[in-house]
Length: 345
Length: 193
Image 1 (cartoon, chains in turn green, orange):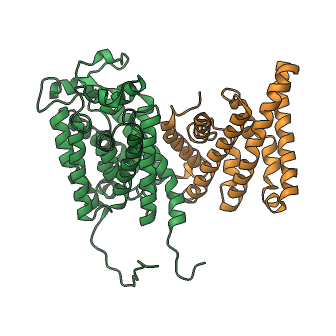
Image 2: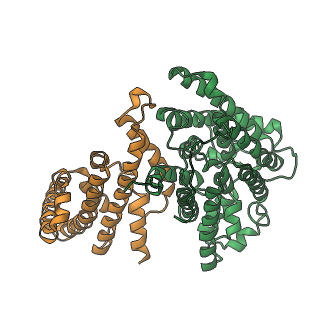
Image 3: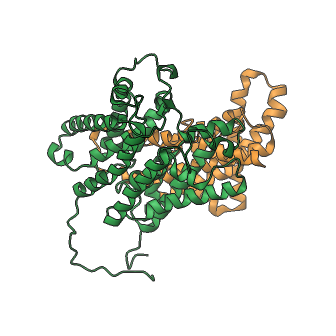
């Protein structure tokens, strides 16, 4: 009642379209991708390119089957964003066929069976990632260690070897060189389960000042891109603030309860896919809640689930799971936070 | 206390009856069209599941395991569930007729349904006392209600003509359940011993 704004007709279109918004999302991901490449080698660029090619292929086949116009839907840019976000969530060492399976699942089951862009309930990139994480757990746990600048181990040649030449049947950790390791989150989870203390674990070489070495900088660059998106008005501040705020609050409470068992707030925010999800994946306008209060509730649910799955679940990072569950709750949130029309009971 | 809390969380989200065991889909689909019937089903579940859980645990420990041969366990569990549901219905009718009118139609649907039988059979793995049986029943009921209330809202979005014709109706509902179940698999690891 207090902040009610009276909006009367005529309304003017502000000139924004799906294409410009998606273009800005891609542009704002560039600093993050550049930093990722600096620390973890060019494998991620190959994954992005592969994902885009696969996504265009799958999307055009699906549009052909559904008898839709190729030019309109291929150029709107949403499929590129899905592909890039998916590629950023998987490891740079993922074999090409896993990338392909993920893209297929995401676009077919999460997008086109619901009627294409604008009708989907679940985020295609998050669904694709969850599917391959559940199907290929060993391949999804091979991550490169952070190295400053170009190096032999994460060179283009080695990345090609991992992505294209890995034998399909003999998937074991022995096939990788010493470059691969668990992510800091997974390492933290395993060693906490083995009764080590947080401070003790943090002294090992793969941790930096706040979170994992390298990962913290990648997250900070994603954050810069995300703030740029908010400044440009492409996304609203509600969802990122709610997600990061709730992760911060939950981890602060548990960290204060026992410093040895629960890592600090900054560690949680700067590691894994927390910032990427908060600014780029969860803010997908189709699958996120539409009302301002709904956005805050939606973000808080995601933040709480991320923290719960990371701390007590079996998976090291629960970002994609949290987004899928929250997407399922969005219709309910929207229904109960919808503003009433004047005169309605 | 923390173990009871773990049972509550694990039965409501991690080992959700609908998404993890694929039980209780029939009442979910039958009553998720409108908010009214859905709330009635929720009320019924929250009343009945803890009662059924505790009573079948008691019968199982004190009567079946000692006096009934193995091959009759399943059939006697079914009978216990049917009788418990009927008696619970009668008690609710005596105590608060208003609520009874709302859940009257669900009672025959639930009496010989896999939902309650599945709950009782799964519980045999981890329930160790009367109070844990109570919490397990309550947690399962709350988990079912969560999914049911989610589905009432989701189904309004699934009546979309843009969905390809072969997948309209029941098919897209099952696909949605499947993707939700992928999401809930993230809770694996939060489970009772």
